[in-house]
Structures are given as C-alpha cells and as structure tokens.
Image (cartoon, rainbow, N blue to C red; front, side):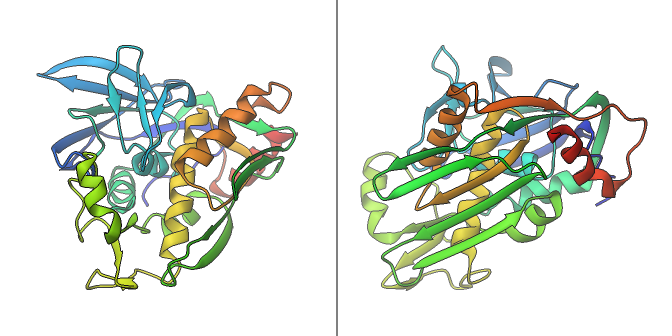
Length: 313
C-alpha cells in the first residue's frame, strides 16, 4: 500500500476509482465511481439516472430502509441503494472517512462476493490525508440487544475498535464459528476482506420468486447444498463464513458515521441485529459521545493506536 495511514486526521481516497459489476439481487449491470471528498463529507451515495443526480444519500443509520439479506439505505423520496455493506466495509475498514460514491443503479455491484475488489482498488490509488482532525464515536456504557436466540452489544473499549462475532448454523458445513480481532486496516485487509457472502441452495427458488438473488452465482456466492460447499474451488479458508459476517458488521456499523471507539460482539447475528445494536446505542445519548483526535502537525504510522487512545481519554 503506497499511502501512509494517519490516525489523527481524516482521509479520503487520493484519486477517482471506477468499478463495474452486477447487482447480486437485481442481476442488473451497475457502475460505481468513487470520488475524493472534502473533510466532514462522510461516505455519501450520489445516485445517477440518465446522466443526472437524483439523490444524495448519506451512509447513516438514519437512512436504513431495509435489512432483508442486505443493507439498503435511501432518502425521503424513495430512492434507495442496496447491498452497500461490502463497499462501506472496505472504506471504513481501510479508514477512509470521506468519499462520494457515484452509482447509476439501485445496488452496489457484488463483484466476487467479498470486499477484495474494493480494497485492491483503494490500495492502488492510496489515501489522501486531510487537515481536519478525525472524529470518533466513543462508547461510554454497554448497550445490549436480544432478539430470540440472537444478541449483540456495544461496550466501552478505549484502545480502538474490537470486533467479536460468533455464528451458529444447523448446517454441519458451517456449524459454530467465532473469531475476534482488534481492528485495523491491516487486519481488515488480511483477515476479513476476502471472505465471500454465502447462501443455501434450498433458499434459491424462494428468493427468485421474491425478486432477490437474481444475480447470484458461483462466482460471487459460496453456495451450500447437499451438505457441502458447491463451489468447485471450495472455501478460501475454514473460517470464511464467520469472517464474512465480521465483514458485514464492519460495513453495517460504518453507518454510525464515525469510526467507533468501542467493542462490538454479536452471537447468531446479521444485518438486522447489527443495525438494532447501533440504533440502540445512538438512541441513548448517555451511552456515547463524539471524541476528536488531537490536532497534530504530523503523525507517523505507528501513532494510529496512540491517536485513538488520545481521543478516548
């Protein structure tokens, strides 16, 4: 990666990035162009139709419209963008604070079902450090959400963002898996970005009738059927299933609008639980605060954790 990572200041991408692909649910072709953005812009989707912009949608928990199989955000006029989680995970995972995401369809392209293509593209152009100090969402007290046998929580964790995800499926090929990481751009890039979305062949007909998964195939989805992984190449690693759930969590929690200083744990969760925990936190104004990194002239890469710690104090 060519750019320095600077923890105390906001960042954007250094140059424009254009990517083309297919929507996993719509099956439609779509083009996404990532543009550098000024400080405090956040991550915003600029929806285009016929060459003109029809919506400007901030990637925010307040704009979540649907959580069925993917995360969908939209505006008050009914314009929506779906399957935003893998792209948002790549941006937040690599600590990109500001980016304008131009898109000419209703769904972010699925690419290979992971965040790898997005990460590689961002790494190729690098990041640009901005002059404005980074802001963090600091968790002040635990917030827990239970839904049936699923539960999730956000708790204080001053040294950065800790991610702990556990899954438990009846299918023996998945079973019970749990991983936990102290997150950083390197951890996201090396441990989570490659993990692909997955689904069950037994659900395909039902999803097609509902107008979903029309673009899903063995090049972008790990398919499970007949008690095994149907993809000829198999899994990318034995923990690919839980790694993808962690990737999704990074993307869903990016809707906080800021990097999180805290620890997130989920058990048997998914997009809905991720969203419910974040909303529960933000609904309790005594459970969080916005912390700003200290103003500095220059920070060397190892100061990432120090900058986050300073904001937490």
